[in-house]
Length: 597
Image (cartoon, rainbow, N blue to C red):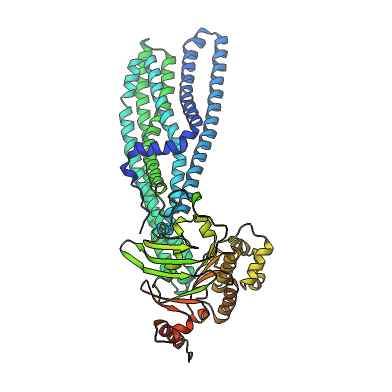
């Protein structure tokens, strides 16, 4: 069996991941992206100007009593502030816009890719994990696309620019002030690393708590039926406490970061000011220089902390895009090699189906179907019967190519399904499963899913044919009644009839009914069976029956056991001799307390 494999992105390294990300999502908007980086540089350089203006004001304009120079410097400072704020506003808006557009494209690409991957992929994945990659991981990417470059580019420019200006004003003071930088960086890095591991552990605890919450809310009926509210309250409380403890650990390190880094920075400032005062008294430097020095050193701590924190953001970003590309680079196992558009698209589908020596497995070395061969003429009704786990559902799932066969061939109208245009093939087939999924929308929207362009009159007509119209009319809002998550507000029989109406609206050439009458009462079964008899007319139909009384009129019956076709014939043919089907049929009626004659 061909299985979709997750690519090993870690083997590519960070630079290769970054290259993939850039080529796929940045290169087409690189003009906006690099203009934004230029604004980060410009914004960082502007921050260096006000302390220099203050120096000029204190050293020359005020001592010399030149008011015109004071006015000029004041207007210049105002212009710098206004210009800086305008650049900041543009950076914020365009930075978020670029990040939002990039994340939108990534999210769309990943969602579409999940749609392209076969059911074999989704069978082995938890819904929560896929949702996490689409939402949580890409939120991390979004934050970094906006704040990451600003944190790196803006901080580096501001640090080097500040050091350059400081050296220009006073080499001794600059060398003294830089002595404290390694202590500040080491302290910040240590706490950021602790915070990073703590928040990562916190996210795991959040995930555990969310899983427990989702399980409990979905299984509320079971919890109440077993009177296990106290037990579940205790289990949830334990996980909630674990999350609280993990969160408080992270907050402890966070609470130490800003005060501690500010304290180290202030110690450095006091030393620099003390020595600066000595130099001013000795006429080595001016008062304006030490005031400007103080202003520059006050803002020097912020870019250092941002750079240290970028290390954490960068690791989270790489982890997120690694997980993103790990799934995005999976090659779908069910695809048209030469381009799906060039594949078979018939003008009309007859509905003839042929299995030729088909073998199939969900997992390697675990064969589910073995040497399946049979032919179904157009408009025939074929029933698949057998014990649970015999492979009946697996057979019908192969017809719309939901899974890929291992060996042999499966033909629809004489053409191998692998040669069909996939959309055309699936558009000609409709399925009603035992526990068919209804979306948490209204009844009319669920039926219309079979053909979204259908009119309300067409929807009501198929509802009548599916024996669903009467109960729908009795619902609180009729066809506009919301069915709840997975159709929880409807009974099992009602859900089945809505599913049949949905399938019928599609007007398929091949109809697959998998246990459509299971788990319903006798009256509901009769309504569903009447609907089935109507909708199977004029189309090829495959029926997997839980109750054998519903398939006695089938054109052909296949008895499936352990992944093989053991017997084949009409109901009368199979009942006329000692067959497994006859034994199966008699056993069911004996259980139901009926005489089969």
